[in-house]
Length: 231
Image 1 (cartoon, helix red, strand yellow):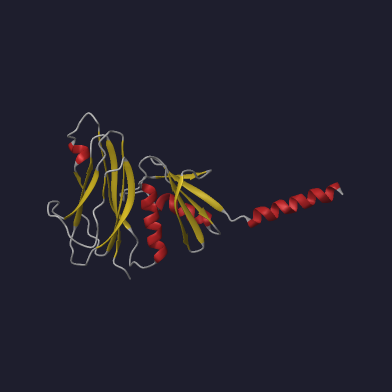
Image 2: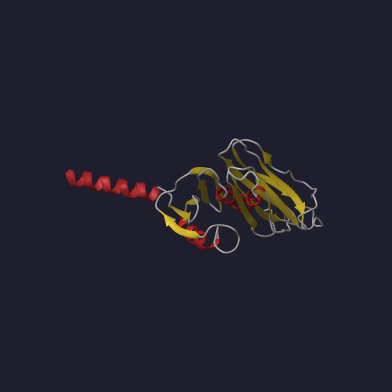
């Protein structure tokens, strides 16, 4: 009887393990970003995430640090691709990589673009409270980028002083002329904030740049992900 009970418990354990979808999580160094993958084929998907994305070369993402035992942080999005569920988590006062990863995964999910998303740049600044005029934090200009279609501007900031103002200005490729098009220019005066601005450029729009900054006592980060022309 005891042997039968032990066998039954063992069988239940095996069935329970078999019924639980396989999962794995990839963490990224120099950030709190981690991506959990659940479903049949999760192991192969995690192996692809470590070297390929978000990651590794000159596209602005932190280098993949490999698998971690447990996911952590605030859930930024859940995206289903080819039967796998990708859960993106990030944490901290300024969370940039989580929204960018979500934007990239959602673009892949929609299958409406001719090519894979590309991160045009990641730009950040910080201005100490003791320096009310801080060129390195108040005013930075991105490198030029050309979308020829859709692009996302992801922004976040956090202020510790009494002044809290964050702004962006979309300009033409020369970095001086104010650009016009199907987009808004995020500006905020709360102590902290974040968001994603979805934009669309016509094929003849030409290159863009982003001018961004914040008041003293604030740190901020801005990035642009090019989604490109729709298929």
